Length: 145
Image 1 (cartoon, helix red, strand yellow):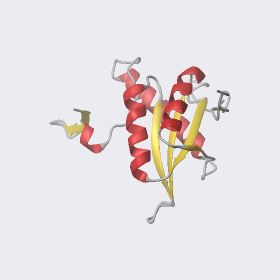
Image 2 (cartoon, one colour):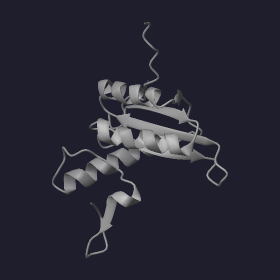
Image 3 (spheres, one colour):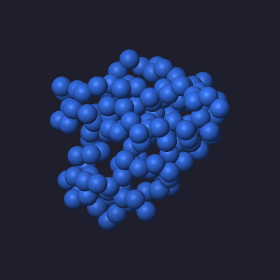
Image 4 (cartoon, one colour):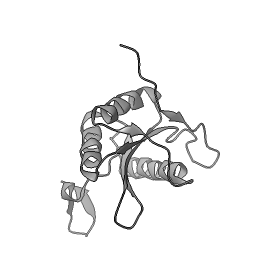
């Protein structure tokens, strides 16, 4: 069986970020429905480490017609596994719909790294959980369940 072409992108080092290679490697896959995108996003969180992933819908206002999953990290080899999962779930490689989306997600990934480091756990897996995966503590802050 022939090896499939990889759609992992290399955005290179950034002069703007505190850690220049934050989110250097990324990919975006399009899915036929929001449900399939959500299931893929959940699998990525369960089966990969040291990656950030996000779901986006386009246009911003319903009805949505484009359902994307974005994955970002600093190690290209880790994204290979994420790309395999996206393909298994029926995703197709996509292009960003917003010109500044990649850099915006790199900034978000940097924020996640800063939050982890200041919380005293710099090696933890950076994640954004669904609403049902969070609880409110006594100070009104969201915490993982």
